[in-house]
Amino acid sequence: MMLLLPVLLFGQLRTQAEMPEIRDAISKPAAGLLAGFLSSERFSMHHSFSASFLSAGGHGMMLNSYMNTIHYRISDPLTLRVNLGLLSTPYSSFQTQSQSWDNNLKFFGGAELMYRAGNNTTITLGVEQMPGYYLYNPYRLTR
Image (cartoon, rainbow, N blue to C red; front, side):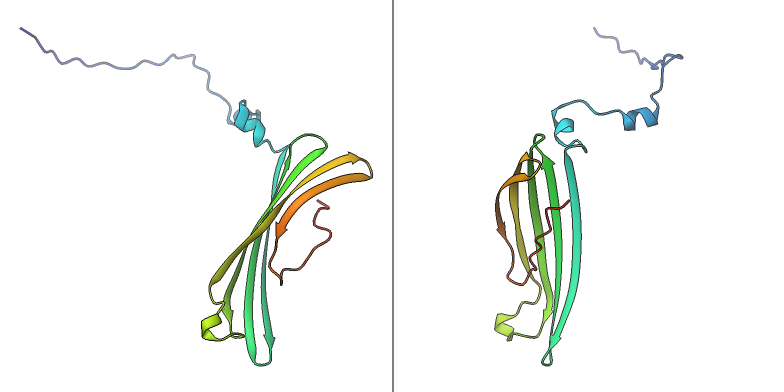
């Protein structure tokens, strides 16, 4: 025959337990593969947003674009850059209703692998797909 007795237990804490300092926990570099991969020394991200309005011949068009540029330093001379963009045309009266661009989202972007062979030599391999009316910026790699 079994006898059931109610038992009440309490956890005990050490009185001399050391509490970590928040300042030390934040500033101390994290260990592990993922933490090294996303280290702020290797990884950077830049955002840009643009809003434009065009008016000509009694018609109007609004154009918004968002660009996210990610730089990742694989090694000292080798860098990967990825552009991810979103283009939105919330309003356009230039085309007929069947060809309307209203609320049409377009994704665009590209990637580049840059190898710095010397102080004056850089080899770049890249692929990019931009909309025809997105301005070309020859100085985009200056960061």
